[in-house]
Image 1 (cartoon, rainbow, N blue to C red):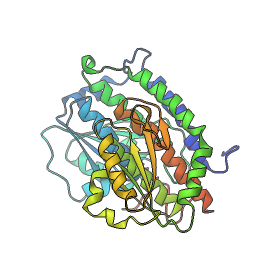
Image 2: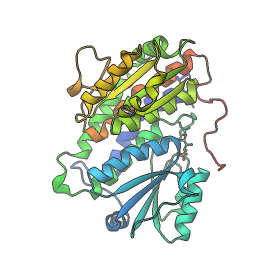
Image 3: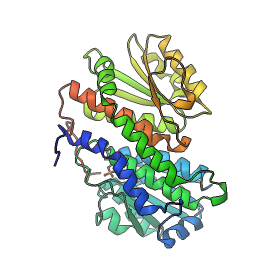
Image 4: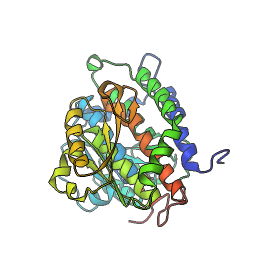
Length: 357
Ligand code: M6R
């Protein structure tokens, strides 16, 4: 039931702090210890390579998770689009372990990969929002995303749940002595941070109406580096999916290798700047677009903010920033769809659960 909400998407965006708290309560103790079946951890520990397989928004969550498995757990990790991996499997490592990310647990491309993985005798873990779904039943292990039913076609809270649960797994696999932060505390702070962003809805409604709703806006770009590049892909998908604005998400350094040609007077370019190592470079890339007339909007963490920045995010662990930076992009997509008088929850040509290959 949508209750007071005009659309499920907005309700689901608002539920994100609760989803994180629910995952924290289920999987972490107060002092940051992990509550997970030992068998899953043992298998992941023994693996020499993690293969994450997913589609759409879930794939974008995987791009964020892979960074945590590599940087926190020191585990080589690759992320694959299910629709590609199903028909062109890479050379696998000696001891692979597969993670399937899927809100619905029914995505046909991911099911095809899981079937191949099972035939080859490899073990897997599905992270899904739907218990007893096909990917849940057919994987070696499965853990619930606990996001509650996601009704809007545009996935929001499932993304946040997938990133959170991958963070918990990566943290569990990490060498405790190397982890300088308590994940329980970090995630609790992030829930508070997301709440403050969703309480700022008017800001995003205004920006969407100014930059993205006008019929003269035909295209938009999201740029960032590292984890921000992964969020840029998700932000662009969300905008395309529900507002029909042609949007692209880019690793900011790639703009100059071709895409810069598309920048015209007034083209919206939204920069995500949350990664200390590359913040200056992204600002440089953004200036290259504004020099060609682009209309910039910056979403920046507090520690990296400069005078003139547009939206300031609270500081969190750099690899966890996608959990906060994605929220403004969800709201920008929502208000663009609304401003264009579209059916936010049911965009044309799309289905919630994609059961065809
Ligand atoms: O149910 P799944 O997570 O496997 O679905 C994958 C994609 O179809 C899904 O994330 C899709 O990209 C969303 N509609 C994006 O908002």
